[in-house]
Image 1: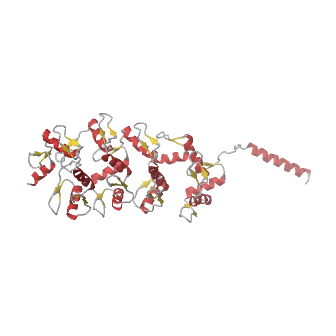
Image 2: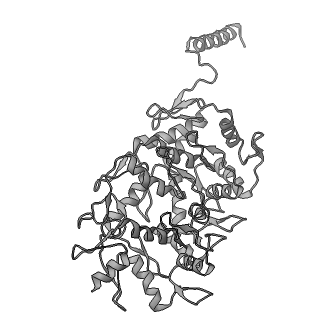
Image 3: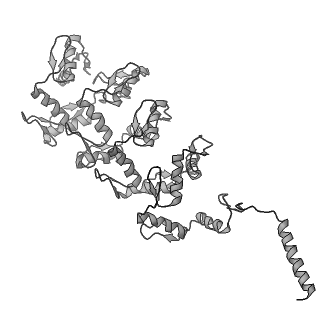
Length: 474
């Protein structure tokens, strides 16, 4: 190479370095590739191209075990670890294990208590930016993912997939303690907290404890008094939208879900499924004192107070105590000055005036349900169906002492008290004793002269509903 050529090569190299120096210097880690679809930035071209597959919708890599598809081979590989059951990454704080190190890192943020990502619409804080983005979909109101079986919409595709398991009926996750099955592993874990008895989430206002944080949040709505969901037909308000939807079914009057076993109808398929467990005796909670079965642990818990003198639900305004939360709630309406009407037919109170347009919610305002076998009339269909068992002999409960039959187990238990001879309910005016509190209450009308049961056809009134009913038949 001649000296002239060598000089040109050296000069060209210096010139190229000079031009590079004149370009704006990009610091290490600076992001220069921008996605036109979502605005996300990337440092490396390879990562940018991989990201663009998300928007293309192409998922060429499919799992041969569950059929789930992915846009990248690496994501499929990570997914397959789930099927292997191997969870090699364990949290030192709580012992929970994960299939991916990134999942462990994300989980450990929950122990740190740091929530650096704030929603600018409602002020709620989150530990991860991804969780915040998912949360913000709630405010957008956009629910782009629709279930083609029931028409329900969801904000996320993952939530839709979980929902669709309900329709499949497939429940692969079983509880080892009670045999109850679930469609999702998360629901099984939540359920298992019931058996552990651990309720670490405590309400700081009333001290009630819960097994799950979601249950605590729902409970705390009671204390706020906020009922943002209003019925457009009657104006009744609810703290939760799901309770409003259930209530609105009562206005439609449509109960399309009928039980094949007993003919009872329900406004929703979930209520029917819960009811069917009573017939199959699967996933039910049984009282060890009277053998009555319940479909939820809460119902059993409330029922157990009927066997004791304990009244754990106390009114904070007048200190009156109750055995069940719904009894306390009904009582508190007196203090809120909500107008209550007393039904002239069944003597119970409700928020309706008992007119034809607003019949009593307890008895329907005395509307007759007639038995086509004996002609007896009843105030509601449930009592009529119960009465019909006397004619059919179906599901009757018989007393071992005298052989008398009863349509409900509770009526049998009440009857058996007469054979025991125990009369612990004493009248404070004449000293007469009675087997049940209801018998004492009826007896006291002799002293007070109260006649709460009015005839619908004349001005006469009676102390007992049976006397009124007999009078109306004549």
